[in-house]
Image 1 (tube, rainbow, N blue to C red):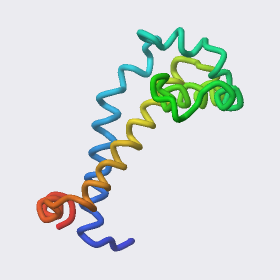
Image 2 (image 1 turned 90 degrees about the vertical axis):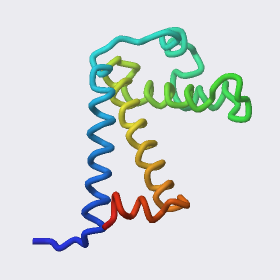
Image 3 (image 1 turned 30 degrees about the vertical axis):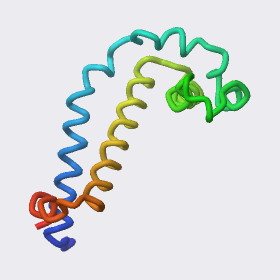
Length: 121
């Protein structure tokens, strides 16, 4: 049996809780359809693939939401904009960002002791 310090076990429990809660919140969207401006955006020629994205979108131009369009281009490259794959990719992206924020706050928060109480010891 592998011995893990209590601090690591509690951090893993927090990570698992964040993953499960994110999945629970977004689970219904996995079988849903495209919404709002998704249809016009995914049918745009500039997200046919990552190569097309580089030609048409300038990262420095924030009015066209380059990060959102890049995720659409990546999604199209991976799964040809199938609804389930689109929503699964977005779920994974949300979980990744949630964990990134968790660890960033854990490392930089001025309330480090309170986080230690909750997630470390």
